[in-house]
Image 1: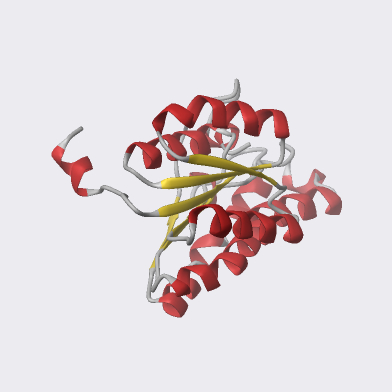
Image 2: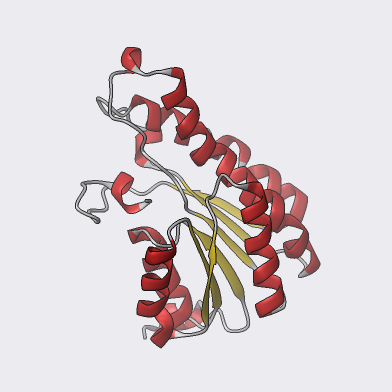
Length: 204
């Protein structure tokens, strides 16, 4: 392990990661476990959640909670399970997201727009909403919301995804001020996983 990585140890910290069964989510969980954090994986597919946890168990203390990011009761239950099993919370990685359908802007239906909004905006808000109290209880912490370079650079056919993820940088400062904690938006470029090109494939 490099000296830089050694300085970033997360021993004694607890993290919750939404969208944990996709490429970015699983890679983040693996790194956190290697750095010493106890980690709760949140995903909407039981099979994928169990498989991901199975691949990660060798790296540290990892658990799983079944929930869709857009389900408030499920997100609340995931946070409650984290507190019950690990005793607190220090880090939220709000990674769950969807690219929606690839269509020209004028061809999108309202229902298609609202589906992406619910996952990529409402889902992130729900995660933050239910993590604020336990983060405050530990004196602060870190919140990272995964966005996309599509929010900065327009791509043909991905106008919907780009417009939605572009909202994250505007409202992530709110928990920073509320908690006196680190809060950031990460906007990855191309991450080729799950058989699809780009970061849209990694956040499934």
